[in-house]
Amino acid sequence: MNARILSFRTLLVLALAALPGLHAGAPAPAAAPERHCARPMPAPVLAPEAGVANHTFKALSDHEATETALLDGNLSLTITHWGCQDLMLTFSVEGKALPDLTKDAPAGYREAAAQIRRLAALKARTGFNLEKTAAALEAAAKKPKGLAYIRPIVIPGAPMDRITVQGYSKGTLGPRLTFEFMRILPRKKHGVKKVKKPVHPASR
Image (cartoon, rainbow, N blue to C red):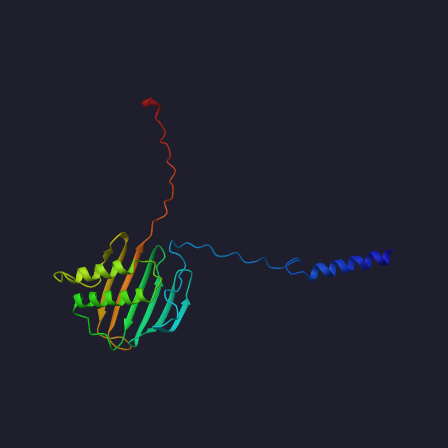
């Protein structure tokens, strides 16, 4: 009888020890790290299709990523996903087909509008209204007086969305044009408990 009991207990201990996570000292499963950024986690803007070659997407953190592609016309595109309290998307296009736009802001705005329309045709998932953005840049280019690079332009219909443009004379493969989308995200309001001031007896 004792041998049977011992044998049963031994088998039971061995069976429990074989189950992962039940034996003493097994590490508890790691909890997912808490996100503190208001912006959503980055996701690819483009997908491999006609007009998009050598597409890559690399997540760097829960709010940063780098995306690259080769577009028709031998234009190199780099998309930088960043921002924590605001959503930022920076597009950098370069290639010999681009003119030197360093000193010609109106031409840079028109070229940025053309590249944004190209992205719309490629069904780029930016989260921004690309058609309205391109139209806003073209409208700004028609008023060249005082027009300058790196001046935020509000995207019509989206008061929290901005676009900036910058032209460069040289990149790795030729002249470079950068345009950057920004969405100002609502800030979380932390309630502050009001403390009642003590009333002085003499004032009662």
